[in-house]
Length: 260
Ligand SMILES: Nc1ncnc2c1ncn2[C@@H]1O[C@H](COP(=O)(O)OP(=O)(O)OP(=O)(O)O)[C@@H](O)[C@H]1O
Ligand SMILES: [Mg+2]
Image (tube, rainbow, N blue to C red):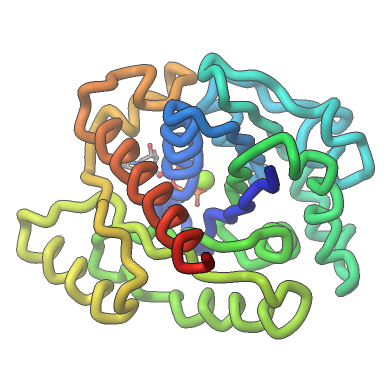
């Protein structure tokens, strides 16, 4: 087993990165995959959203980047096959500490000892294109870009795509676009469906069939420290992330078939 590492990234704030990281990770784990969620955002929302306090500098993602053994930092969650490495404010120091190019590889190397313990490693990243996100993109096999169905959705996307190209040409030629995920979708409204159509046109074949509806349960679940499927399994939000996980695994199967 070699883990597929996916960075969840978009430098815009509040687009659904953390909600997607938590709930795709939990949904894949519910489908019997071994999943590690790496909270790689100093805001620590993936940690608190799973019921963990933000760790101090001896535990969590900052310690991982400073050479602590990865195995010792992994915490179990209430979802049997989902584990997490949490993050706290200390992670922000990395922006000052990792300014040389070779240091883009630190996260990749730190995760190496875990590669054969998981099927999927998801990395939640902060709303910026600084050293933290660049490390996540360098560590990853692919990147999942959540995009809300809003008027300015495509704003800033050229910059993100350019960053992905720079990482491909430089430290990580493996990096691929896993896909764009429409979040906070209200496709019944004219604006919602217009934006969805515009995004599908801008990324032909790269937008997930599954879109995530705007759903209050998704916003409530983190305050209970649970993935939405463990808070309200029947909700539209929980069902949407389970569909996304099925689509994700289906694509993976199709890719393996193609490679045979
Ligand atoms: N589909 C949805 N329906 C309703 N609320 C949502 C949905 N997705 C996310 N939210 C809420 O919107 C807010 C922003 O979402 P989230 O934290 O996932 O975005 P983010 O991209 O991780 O933000 P940041 O850039 O600050 O890390 C949160 O309060 C979250 O609970
Ligand atoms: Mg977030």
